[in-house]
Length: 187
Image 1 (cartoon, rainbow, N blue to C red):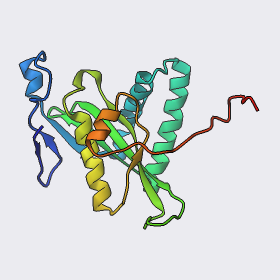
Image 2: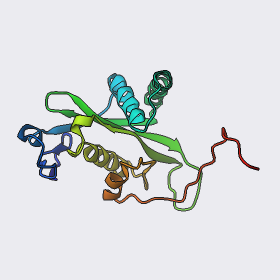
Image 3: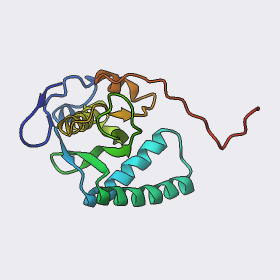
Image 4: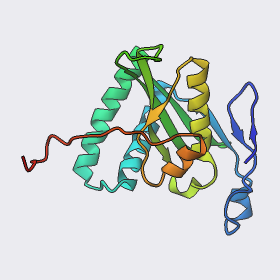
């Protein structure tokens, strides 16, 4: 995939990696990735809901509540500067994907210069635009932003389907563990 870098957004100009069964018009599709602004809130909420649906959460009441909480959280995070996002769109302005970074506090440790760690979250591409490089463009922008702001690492939790994308950028699995405190244990 060829990526044109210039002063504006990153642009995917080649879709030769897309399966040959796709129509010629989708092969020629071009995408822009721009920084999200508060006005993009509903797009980010819609995409996050799509992400949860893809992960198997389909109960409307649960998704509606998740939307409400996320919307409130993003508004607050935008205001205090702990949230950065990107929206991928077609040349016609159709929002086809997005991803965000949450700047979360990190405990002091050796070789960590900042007590803030960027965390990539809410990555989503509309189904009919998948396998066209949209998510790659968003990840590239997130990485570029982190490097520009001198962060030493970018963490995330990847779904099974997303792991290949992140490996392509050099991500590796870590030894993080988790305990679900809402489940009864055998002890």
